[in-house]
Length: 81
Image (cartoon, rainbow, N blue to C red):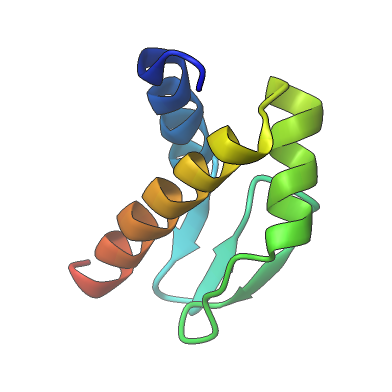
């Protein structure tokens, strides 16, 4: 697996570029131009995988790590706003 420092930076970029609008009940993802309601939060594995592969050159194992950490952080932001 790639150096975790790099992967943690990727996660940081993804989280920073995810827009959560509590007033409008919207979450906009940094990949694929997708958005949904906060209550409907889910991460599309296809778009997330393609984005991480194309933009950051991640492998499948690295994408799994990034995906799990990203999801945990975003869920925490939603839950503990």
